[in-house]
Length: 171
Image (cartoon, rainbow, N blue to C red; front, top):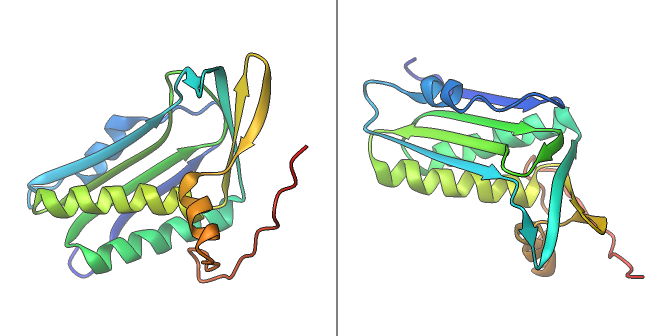
């Protein structure tokens, strides 16, 4: 695939599990000495609360466009072979994977650094929203990466679109 970026980006509709082996196989290549992965799974507690499940919603066309942009940025910073990103929508029970990233590169440093960059950028700027459902209520969550950008005054979205988030009013 000389000169062509090899990316696989999928936003999976509700009830579709992430096939981790599929994405690792996609990025596997004889020229790559490293495959770095990240698997984000639903944990059973958050700040002392019992988590029952996570629920994800997204504006899918923009989410895909933003993830493609993030992959392009990663390629401009590191020498990468292939990138695969999958994110589930709908209900994700405790212990199941909601987001998976696999990146291959000739050298491990590039794969590892790019993998961290991609997940951080997805959490900071892609229009995928998460609700945590507890045994005593539920709340929409703002990722700390996004919050940090808002606090610093950064308004640029991943797709080059300026966004401004209204301040939330507490109860």
